[in-house]
Length: 320
Image 1 (cartoon, one colour):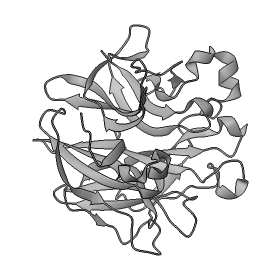
Image 2: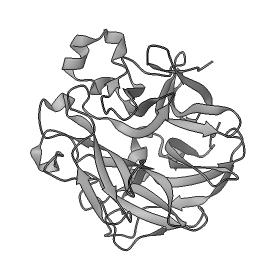
Image 3: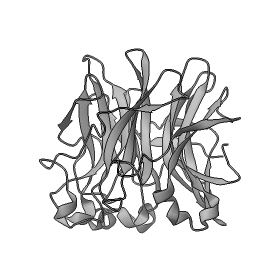
Image 4: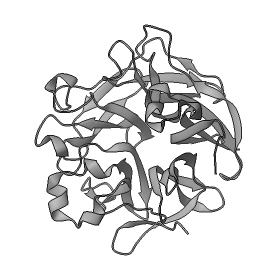
C-alpha cells in the first residue's frame, strides 16, 4: 500500500504508461493535526509502481496556483488521459477569494507524466445552471463541480467527463447527480444533462466508469449523512453507510441502479474513493483510500483487491 509518514493521502487516480502504473493522489501534511483541515491544504502527489504494491514517490504533480488565480487555495480530485500524443490531467480547483465555495475544473498537460503545466485557458469547465445547482441557490454548502473522470466512448471522437454535481430540482438531501460533459480538445467543453437522476444522495463523489462482464459500472463514494430520507425509508439503516458504492447497468442501457450498501468493507474500516484498476497480471481489481479505522483517520491507499460482478448483477470486492 501507499502510506506516507508525513502526509495524509486520500482521493487518487491512475495512469498506465505501458511500463509502469502511475498514481496521482491528494495529499496534505499530517502536521496539520486535524484531518478535516486537509481539504484546504491539498496538493497532488505522484508515485509509480511495477506491481501496484510497492510504490516509488516522484516529485509532486500540482500545487495550488499563484495568489489571485482560480485555483490558489487547493487542488482536488481529477483524472489523467492520453490525448493526441500528450497526457492531460483534468483537476478540480478552488480559490481563496470565494473561500473555496465554488469548484471549477482545469487542465494540465505533460509529456512524461512527471512535469505538468497548467493550460492558460483554465478553468475550462464550469457548472451549467440549466442542469446543475449554483451556490446562490442556498441549498448546499458549496457549488459542487468536482472529481472529473475522463474517458472515451466507442463510436465518437469526443473525450467525455463524469463530474460530481447537484441538481437544482427535488429535495436538497437527494440532489446529488453525476454530471456529463464532452470535448474534442479538452479545452472547449459542452456540458450535458446529468447521467443519473436525483433522489438517493446529497452528493455522489469521485465517479469512475468501467465495463465489467457485459455491464457498465460506475463506482462512486458517499457519506452516511448524505443518503437521502427517501433512500433511508427504502433500505435498512445499516445500508446508509459511508463508503464506496456502485451504479450497475446493462452495457449501453444507461439504466443505472445503485448498490444497496458499500461494495467493499473491512471490519472497523471505511474504504473511500474506490477505483477499478486493471492489472496486467492479476486482471480486474479494486483500490481505495483507507479513510478510517478503529484508531481514527488513516489517510493511505490500499493494495489491489480482487473484484467481480456477482450472478445477480451486484459488484463485489474481496477484502480479505
